Length: 256
Figure 1 (cartoon, one colour):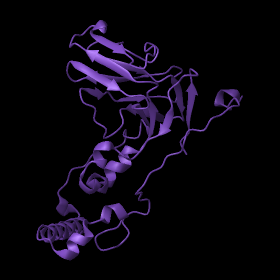
Figure 2 (figure 1 turned 120 degrees about the vertical axis):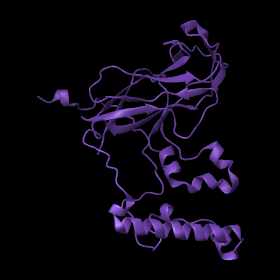
Figure 3 (figure 1 turned 180 degrees about the vertical axis):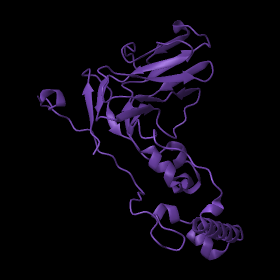
Figure 4 (figure 1 turned 90 degrees about the vertical axis):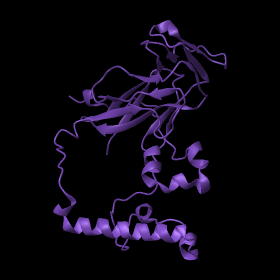
């Protein structure tokens, strides 16, 4: 089990919460159609979010200097200790106010909340080796054009996911024709045929097909034949709420 320890650097550190699978734009799709894409909803909740302490408005005039970004808070809060122009070039910097510690070989993938686009500004991803660092990191967003953006109170500004940062070292992608695996080719073609037939009947308003609505093979983790596809399949992800520790935790340096 991967352990994630979150040391608060301030009594006013942002709230850390399990990520949520819902998105406003997904709610707005017809019949909430977007939630039928299971890979999308699982990605939405694959980590924890840091939430804004208060509402922040930032404006960029297109320049490269620090002073070309102006940050204020409609809530009347002092913004400098939480968000500021630190790098210039249209980059807005948030302080996480946590020092995170992970187990050896595990880093944090630090990014914006997945599948939550924000007009006028884009999150910058980072992989941070939190298994040894004794200092924190920032979360950065880059303006995509001059203008103003607002981060509302309790809006997520940072999304963290533990990852094995050396996990890809031994991976070598191999490219080969689908004919190299006859069974996989047959399964793929059978799926395609069933999919095309279903879509044809749907377009023709076939009553039974319309009643079914959509094929749920991946959602259920089964093959079109009904056979189990993956014993570890997940259709919903609910991560744990952070646990408050009041006593000093035992750390490896204490031993020996």
